[in-house]
Image (cartoon, rainbow, N blue to C red):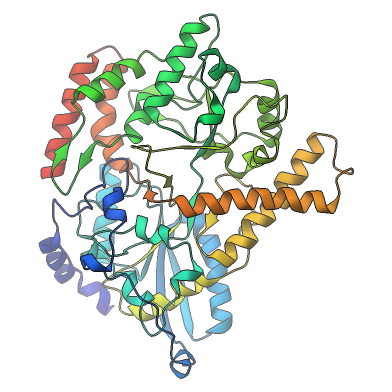
Length: 492
């Protein structure tokens, strides 16, 4: 009761901390931190920890208290598994859950912020890729997790892919913890790339500008074919994968010669109406997860998509690391579909945890977060495999993706090839290890957390795109209007 009646005081206090320049220098409607910000170090005043071994006697104290976690309703069962395991060790802790639905517009975003300020949970679980706190000072809403990582009951960052922590920083602090790095990989269509004289074996990254260029060239060479860059391609996707503004400086980058040229080319590309829809009420491109069989058929028989975006197939594409040199393979080896600049080797942080600064017991909240971080088992093995993420915990990384690749991917591709009973255990172990080596290297390169504000895209930007697609204005007017809307947004 006491925590609830203080809501007015909390609202007033946090209102004073609101800042129109509270985001990191590289955070924008699409992308997370810039490489400059991601590489911040202790020498710049960062509170990134130097691990100190804990005092065993202090770690042994019993834990008691109550915690509340606010999470997307669909994910509460998964968090509940952690809670049950935690309670087996600490029966004196009561963990309860509250749910919310995905945030997709400014009204829902405002409702979420009001809820967090007026009646904060102890822990917030959210999708840091699309739910943005860019207009708020992060250190006013959440605790700096580095303070706990470096504390008496901290962690050893060497046990994790700590480059993920650095990519998720805000002004040298870590205010949300990505538990998984979702794949942002793709495979390129060899036939279509060959048609324009591009050797796919020489390509390691693809930007949205590259893809548009490849597509237009392929469409020109093959005028009788109905081609698409990838399944969900649209100008909305172009904006998601471009740097549009900087909250820190108040700059907006939409009505520029570079963006106008990009948009003029993108608007000529037909939409795949089976997957993308622009309507007067909104934009729709809900994920459509291909079946393993369909993926298999396309990579060996061809497709009219220039790029197969891994955001939909996720780990189901991992068999390509074994077979990309197969004579019938129609797609390239795995390459990175980058957001913004080609140097941004990005990841999507779909499951992130933050501890609310106004939690009555931040230390107990940290104990539960730390327990989740340190868990090494494979709780997600029963999932269908769509958008399977790579754990930041190195020990869990060696268990969870390996199990999935071995059980689903390897077994599936050998079955479809009619070789399920003809491969040896040594061959299986070799192929699985090849995939794991690829993923280890991929994890080590990640330096960019992909973030954009879904509410800003849908509420401020989409209305102008609808006017464009419905023929009510041209590209120049569309970009000028979006630019002006965003200037007001970043400076309000």
